[in-house]
Structures are given as C-alpha cells and as structure tokens.
Image 1 (cartoon, rainbow, N blue to C red):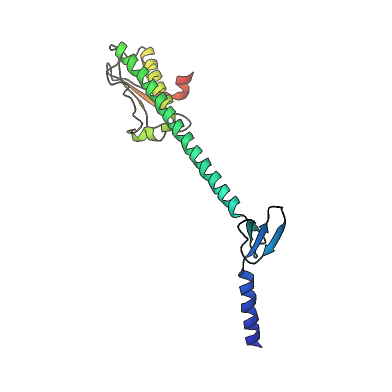
Image 2 (image 1 turned 90 degrees about the horizontal axis):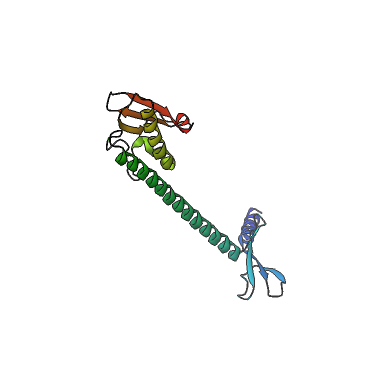
Length: 189
C-alpha cells in the first residue's frame, strides 16, 4: 500500500509541475494545453500553484517600460544636477563681481566659490542648496558691513552649526577681528 501511495504521489507531483499553456489563435479562440503553443498563436503560461497566468510578451513590455522610465529618471536627475551647478556658478560669479568692484570692503578671498566637486564637509550636507548658499554668503557679508561694526569682510562661510531647517553663516571682519553669525531666516527678511 505504501508503495502504491508513493507511486501515485510521484505521478501526481509530476503532473502538478507540468506546464499548462494558454494558447490564443488569430481569431481569438483560447485553448489550454500541456505543450507550448504553435508559433502562430499567442502564448501564455498558467501557474498551477497560484492559478495566475503569464504572458511572456507582456513581461517583456513591462521590463522595457521600466527600463525607459529608469532612463528618463536618470536624465531628469542629470539635468537637475547640471542646472544646480549652473545656478551655483552664476551666484559665485555675482560674489566675485561684488568683491572685484569693492576691494576696500572685501578681501580678495572673502567669498571663495564652492566648487561642486570639491565641497568642504559642512557644505556637502547641503549641496542640493548650493546656489542658495552662495547667494546667502553674499547677503551675510553685506549685512555684516551694514552694521557699521565691520569695515572689511575677510570671510563669509557656511558654519558647522547649520541644520536642514536653518543654515548659519559666519562672517569674519579683518579690520577689528569682529565675527558675525547670521541664520538664513535673518538674511531672507
């Protein structure tokens, strides 16, 4: 009896793992069979365990669509990164123009450009805000000069006390050694 059950069990398990194919001809007639469909018929395979069917062509289309979506996403990211670098470069150029035209108020290296490939550690945390950081560095330097307590700006940098909610800028004045700390909220007002 055990041998009979063993033989029947192995036969049943072999049948259970045999493939079932859903074949659809050009007229739309569907046929189910245990062997793969003819080349002229649309093929789908039935999973006997789950009851679901798979269409190899549909799987290829889904994979192709996913690849296209990934490629578009990468292109968008690259465009956004390029635009961000360009905006940061434009803000840096404004900083250098201000320094060049006001040598009595700014030392030559008071607002050195942050180069996106060589960012200081404190700036790397906020590199997606680089154009804004460059603009705020300029505004912090100008605000320090506007106090009347700073005669010449020696440096204007993003400070390590910055957080995602509030960037902090340190401005050092060479004339009297005075330093100023400004948050981005103070500069935006």
